[in-house]
Length: 139
Image: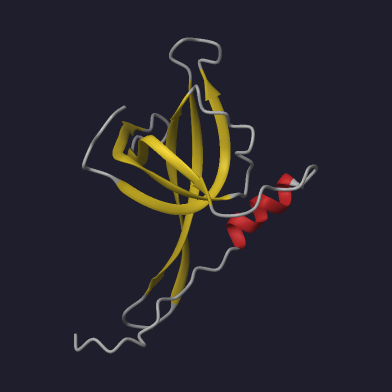
């Protein structure tokens, strides 16, 4: 077991599931998890929806049978950044990656024959929850 005090937690929806080095001793699964939010322009007060994609790496021994596109998950693990230069555009690209992840489903198991297209639309159209200012804190 790997122990690290540098951990992060995120909630999002599964965008894709891929098995790398299938059948090999060092096989692993790569999930893309979409986390929705919004940005608010201070000058105009206009809100813009945003989606951030996080790469999640799981050991090959994990059964990914229930990891369906669109499922809501809680991911806990060690954060890192995968950085590279995009050869086409010549720009630096950085992707957030979570390794040694533990995944907990936040919704019910999807029904057999569920439409993947509906799940992808759900990821893109999910409305972020705006934090309330109804607290009684003096700051």
